[in-house]
Image 1: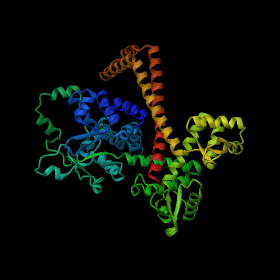
Image 2: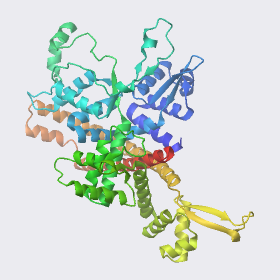
Image 3: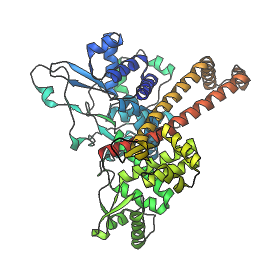
Length: 536
């Protein structure tokens, strides 16, 4: 765990959960697994505060607990899971792209709440969608339920582990911590619920005041609510982050194929990935073999290419030097797989090449690509192959060596390692370069977050004034105020202040966009490192 990762985790926890949760989360990340007493002593917080903060962290899957043999419970922070908070906007946007506004709100609510039951989630999303609709229109629970089922069928959401029945029903003394178990067969099984109803709008203050005198039971009865627990009580759902990562990886591969070849090739690869997205695990080095006939039958309806043309495209993809697609047999018109490990390696290598070119220029990028292709080269060979003068080539190699993009390997002819009798070979270790770059990306995101906090803090009073004015305008518009009155309120913010607000908004938007772009690089590098460590 590097200092950059710890700092970024701390900033993410503070931004999303506040200071107390951030203090406990950071303490656990720094110290590892700790019992409750040690956390209270180490953070200097009250026992009640620590308990509540741990509940929040466990609810959001950011902390896990384990019952030790000696009878006490240890809590451990999941640093990698904390870093995923940075990717929440991408998960929500992906759900919107695939399943529309309903899918977006389902993913958003699950990420905001950590875990929810299907009935509670469907009702909340239906209410939120009804709020955005025109007067008189409402969102039916059935529509939201159908989208929920589709998300579960494609594994974008999954069940949370349940308390094991043995520990729940036995008469023996209860353990200090419950044992959670998950049945893999039921992980994506949606409970059969008869959710009938429509989303409700929030009531106005006047209506609330009128109903304040009504008994609670009467209000529940009139609102269609019952005091009985829902049929899916205890079955909680969470976002399946690995499945979203699988989707992002597939999109990156499809985009890379489209850039290298053409749209038809990318559509063929998209079809292959779609056919194997549920059958292939997120960590597999390649997809399940698919026959040419199966691929042909699964192509989108509007894609009018013949079987012969498809076979030619598959042969072309299999013969490509990048080897995104490989041929694994001849049955069924030819068996083909997508080589995920090689695809991720190519994406990571392209990212490294792009960064070298941006930092050091096109001539350095030429040397870098040469070393990637030839593996090991002496300085004289680099000069000759790259066609760059000796002095310039030496400067460029040393510059990249000092930044850890290039490494130097010594191969002595004699045991005494005498420089005159030693070969000095330059090489690129893609894995170590990717790790170094990933560390820098974490630092960059932490710096961007700190910059955004600084910008917001500097203009805090102006932002509060702007919010107050907007609230007054909204309430006056609701009561039907005249145009002159509204203009008078708007003039409370002067022209220089308005300009300052615009500048702040522009800067914050730039920082947010930069965070998102750096996260895309982080995703490619993390996927490549994980794939390489597991092995092809």
